[in-house]
Image (cartoon, rainbow over all chains, first blue to last red; front, side, top):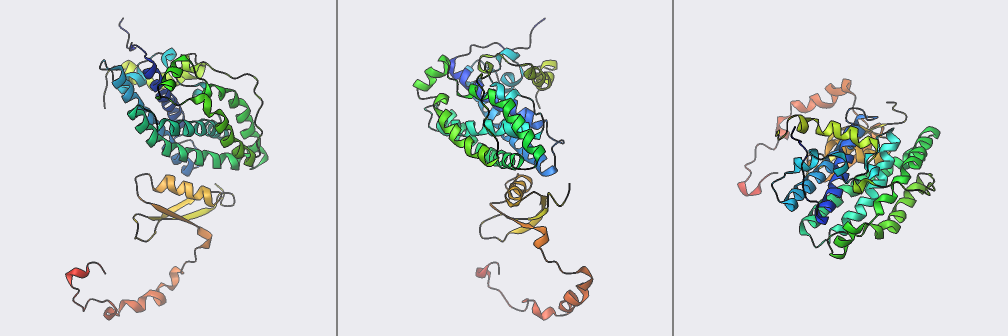
Length: 258
Length: 95
């Protein structure tokens, strides 16, 4: 039986674009799962807004991936027609929503990194990536503002909200190391002035995150072991469920369009 | 959702510079910063504004609906207060 999975040559640039696109798609999808379930209607809409920002970013990036690949594939092919091991997202974004505190902690950890990353990418020699970064950076700045204010209130709130926020931070911290990993694929693009050096953002990220956690009265966990593998397609069990949801339609009805 | 922990805030949006902020609805939020964010997320998703005010609903002093006869009825019969007896030159535009 013919497969509906696409095949393509993954050049370094394509790999880079898919890393950013997959991060945005998977986190955007997770946030969209809150729609109709958030603690209050105002937050329901706020999370949906962030989800839409991220899915919008992923669309721009998948569209660019299709251009870079150049054989006639489209954004939908990249979003919906790859196997799990072909996804390049970091493990942090595929972690489940958990309770509201876990969703907020995940958002703070990711957005504070991405804001620094997009800012650097705005001066990429690749003009498409620079333009996508300029749009995404403004959106991401608000994602930090929103999630950080929530985290401060959860951490410095009631005993229960503090305990839940700290538990989420303890659980998710081990996935932050992967954000700063730079492999040979990315190194070549960094040297060419196309990609930001994620590894060089670590100290600035700490400077950004530390005051938020301090104000939230949360402790930075000591995580001697950092989880990683997402960038090379080694994902946890959670991603499979997300992809089953996301891909059902394109797998059942390949090439379906709106 | 208890009013004690999440009080109500009235939201005013200014759609364009130079116009007044107009009341557009209300949100629940724990404090002023979160109210501002909720207002942004709920009421400016489609580019409705470039400035937001939020005001605690409890700070609004409202007229009593049962007073409406004495407050507003007397104005109804004073048509001469409307400046409709003047010719406004076209060049003046909106007044």
